[in-house]
Amino acid sequence: MAKTRSAYFCQSCGYESPKWLGKCPACQQWNTFVEEVLERGNTKVPTWRSETGSRILSKPSKVTDIESIEERRMPTSDAELDRVLGGGLVEGSMVLIGGEPGIGKSTLMLQIALNMRNRKVLYVSGEESEQQIKMRAERIRNQDGAECYILTETATQNIFKQLEALQPDVVVVDSIQTLHSAHIDSTPGSISQVRECTAELLRFAKETGVPVILIGHITKDGSIAGPKILEHMVDTVLQFEGDRHHVYRILRSIKNRFGATSELGIYEMQGNGLREISNPSEILLSQREEELSGIAIASTLEGARPMLIETQALVSVSAYGTPQRSATGFDTRRMNMLLAVLEKRCGFRLSIKDVFLNIAGGIKVEDPAIDLAVVVAAISSHEDIPVSGKNCFAAEVGLSGEIRAVSRIEQRIAEADKLGFERIFISRYNLKGIDTTRFRIRIEAIGKIEEAFTLLFG
Image (cartoon, rainbow, N blue to C red; front, side, top):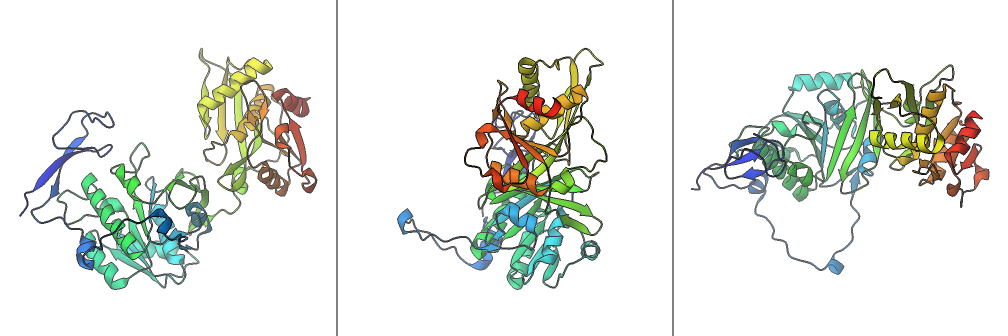
């Protein structure tokens, strides 16, 4: 019989050490090591594999001899989730979704489990009772739920017994931090327990072809709780973002082995569940009865989806010695760069002014194509001259004040044309190869910031 073995783990990054250390050599954090018992006296054999028989040994194969097979995907009846995943759940894949407490992770997963057609779904909950889940299911309308099974269990060996008996098509685990394995002595939620339970579920998914969706907690700095290796083990990592005081939620892909990581899903939290937002521009553009200064509309792309977003800027006289610079949803360093371009190339004295920038709708944008909208909104607020709500912008601004071309300009123009905008400002270098006659919107091709100011403000 093997001896009981213990080790020390960093609670911040999961670094393992045979002895206690004051400072973690991996993440450089102090006093984060805790002792955890790794093995009992019995042999450490994965629960799922011990119940399903011995493992089939694999053999090396030539790359040219391996047959190319397109992965089979399973639609989830949720268009936003399918878009973020790249077309649906891949058989045998493992998806990890994280988010702040109360943001709606459990509601989203239960809604998907109830709405999946002709699929047997097992929803494993270690945080809520059957009655609590039933109350939430009754609150979610338009659900079938005929093939959705609820299991309130935290022991992995019991979960695998029910999986073998039920043989579901999809498994949802809420949450991975509540599970515990009999082969590890440490408490549920510890680094070694999270790692071992995830490994057992991963073996189950790969050997049976059943996709597994894990709900994970996050730490106070926004990262998924547990060892960093947890994100490396799974196939897809999704982040469910949003402000609990607002109704809109964003599902963002951080890692995806079967699709792009630039896709975005948008939901609206309602009393009866989460509503899919098929047209994001409806929430990102505010309805105003009068024109206000400091507002410009930008045409951006998230993955393959074009969106029109509202850029808001406020430039005011600094009440203190040091001017303030604040940006919400936009990189503050890039905003400072654009303000420096305006001061150096265009002569606007913004170094003595407070500048605040906000991207409406609560989303974070990294697309450089909104540079021109940011610049126009800042000058509109500085001069207190409104910009017409029928104008939109899609161009990058360089350090010399030139207007640079951006990618997939035709999709941006088509989205603005569809939403009824009258003019779109783009770089003149984007005109090559574009048939402007098929758009009703007027296309203004410019090469310098000064040209945009002349056309807008005279």
